[in-house]
Image 1 (tube, helix red, strand yellow):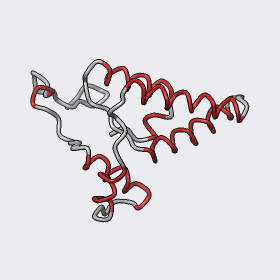
Image 2: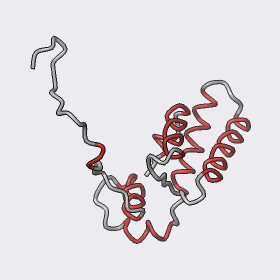
Image 3: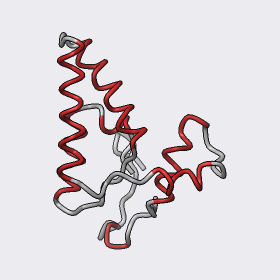
Image 4: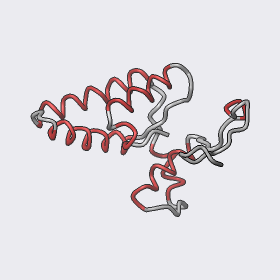
Length: 128
């Protein structure tokens, strides 16, 4: 599940969508996230000197290209809305958690992602 906070920064968005394109994960988002991406991404471009119309057009293009590249990524609202009422996290974020659950997202790492050798945390002065 890609939330708007991961899609607004252009570098992070490019990295995540490149990983999705390489098959690392299946991207999922919803129309509310697209709207938030448009709104906050345009605001960022305006702060960086773009005109409002130019910023809006740029974000419309970004969202259109995301949907062209990943035509199955946008989750249908009905799949999310059935679960949203049961979510207990912050009300403004319930649509994200419900969409992730509806899409079958998991927070667990696959066993193949575990490091081959155990790691030990060390302090900056190299002591354990």
